[in-house]
Image 1 (cartoon, rainbow, N blue to C red):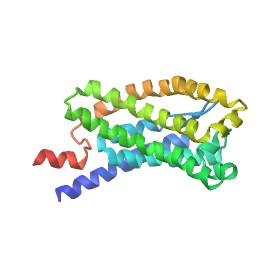
Image 2: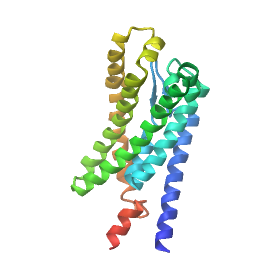
Image 3: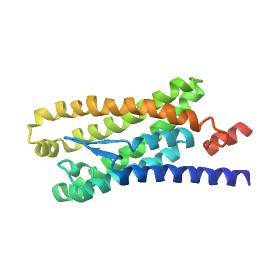
Length: 220
């Protein structure tokens, strides 16, 4: 009965974070248009969920992040929608292009939750203070998103990226690094602050939602 209650609490926690992601998506502040790429706040629920509920929850929430990204890129296309929408990618790159878009939009975002969740577990096992561990996980999660997405675009879609930006291939690396060091760093700083603020509350309230595996281990 206790395990069932914990399972239910875990599912409710995941559902609440998913609802928050959908609110961010529907209000337009989940993916914010910028001149070259969309900045995001959708990674925050992914990272927080991974810390509070574990890597599996982080992976699920990362998947929701990815689906939101694909939906936005498909329904409100920009010059770089080919990198995030399998529909538009298929028009320019066929089935291979669609697979690349799914990896960038979905696969990379799932890994944000996985990396954040396991990094939190590793830091807790190393007895790192929460005030240090939480912003570290926030930064790592945000940079995982930026580096994986932009790195995948560079290695998988550099010619298409150059054509979309009307630049030569030699300029692609500089543009990608510019995005990483501007919007990527800004998202990492925001994640550090927000993850510490939100997780600091959620991990210490009486009805906190901890990963089932961790709770069971404590009772043994």
